[in-house]
Length: 437
Length: 133
Ligand code: SF4
Image (cartoon, rainbow over all chains, first blue to last red; front, side, top):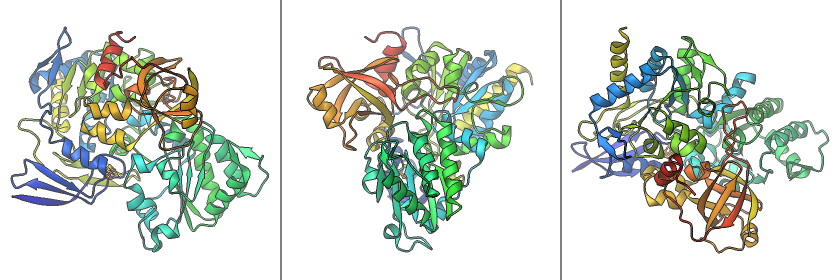
């Protein structure tokens, strides 16, 4: 027999859908089916059941092969590696719960580590901009109930946040948006005609890397001032039209993604995006929100925000928290050979960092904590598999709009497997022993 | 014929699904070990759809399979889904922001019919050991 668990949270993307239904066996050991999730979310749940899943820690041998080790050995290796390093990098944190992040922060303080999360290759530049000029934002509930002008800039939710549009931004009928899709105007700015752009009322096919100019052009257009004939590859008539569309709405929301944060200009692009939002508030209500990727990258920023005052790239090596993107950020530290050990947890820099940084991780003592086999586990010396947060253990995660949501445990992890929180807790205890504190 | 294009990287739904199904599996290679080219760029390249190509930038080189872009047209722009293949060639410079320049790397694309597309684990392992061509 089986039973259905309702109101399950999907632990994949920052949309953090909270309406998933999962069919599990009566004893809670097997997960059979997943309803309501998008293709990516469903795959994440189902993959936890993979028969070839790695369930015990393993250490890389001289000849490149793996040897299984016990959790105790992995804990000892990790603790010693961190204690012996002068300046270890503790990177990742975005696919685990806030509870594990909090313990990780304590470890970071004890061993004088640099702690950095995946925002560093995602919305890190947005965070710099927010610290520069602030951010007028809102919740996804407000978007659903109020927003009638939706602007997606440099993001492609049809592919990256597949249910974002149906749950919050385009299709749902909300309290003041009873007409759903037909009452909303959608604008997409993207150098490609993406699947999101195809369903938009207006697509501005900006020249790649020229976002800053186009943001500025919007500010000019709002005021009805003069624009050159073409800005960033877009004819001025289209810019005036898009600006007018935004101004004529009752509530405009700008969602922006990697197209803005990873193109040249980086944090300055987002400064401009926020300035556009502020200007728009002269005419109507407007808000802006980053499309956060990992389901709990936002939570990691929150935890460090209240512990250290900074959302990512926190250098604890001097005994107090320092923050200086470009200096204390993971890729810069690796590029400059400034760290001497790497702990990776709940993320995959092996797949998502430029290769030159991956090579640096390979050359250093390193531990990867991840339920999956990934390019990161392939280059690290020790791989510690753990239970899936949000599937095999609950815990707090923050949605992209900074709303905390308690994720749910739906099935048991394979026999004898640890969670991130347990593993880090044991490493912390071992570090205290080694340091005599 | 080698062509010069502007490379961007990013998510695709196939990238997300195959990644969650296991990065060691062939579906991940099929989803991310590719370069999406605009039809006009394909014509200039003079290669068939589905041919392996070598993509080279100032920062590295990688072999991927060339496919026609479905989210176009976008002449002059090439797209490799985010992942280890793209990361062999992207511009790693952060220009003091912490953020590597994942979007907007000038690259050369040329046919490499007989060179294989490695899977993700092989690619990083061989890369780290200095065994890549
Ligand atoms: S949109 Fe995101 S949170 Fe929602 S089901 Fe898909 S992957 Fe999960």
